[in-house]
Image (cartoon, rainbow, N blue to C red):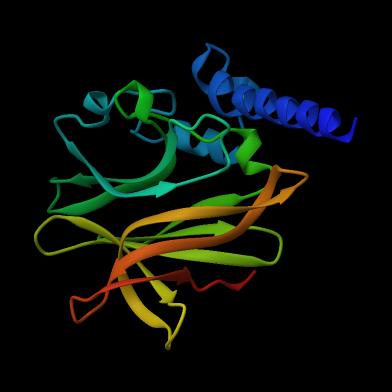
Length: 217
């Protein structure tokens, strides 16, 4: 009986999250998943709906995938998380926008925004530091995980974090090349962010692995 109840709960979670993260932003009713953050994003020049990779750039903005994050929030195994950047050539070479959102690997890496199912447990916001840098904040109840997305002199964007390996001191400004978002669960259902594991390259060019060091909220 207990196993049957757990199975039903997982099924309800899958239906709820799919409805919030997918249908709410791609089924013709974006208002169903709208939040204040979503509304702000809709005012940007970047599409705030399910979008093909080819449609992410235009004559004025160049799209670049900065990093890909594995995840266990979405019940569909085809889904991952992308950190994307848009670089503007006018005026100068500037970092115009940064976004974290879903990647559907089963549909040619189409992007779609996070809905209420994710934002209920994780707050994600972006702060511009200057013309060449943003900070991305992923916050849960007590702590915040920071990623600095910076535009290099070569016109390529990269994400950096303070990373703590399993042994050794914290590594500052380690360039993130990939990662895995690990969730807190209750009876097998994701309920929040437990930690963010990443692979990165340190200042000496050495490959490292560890957890992004959180800061108090």
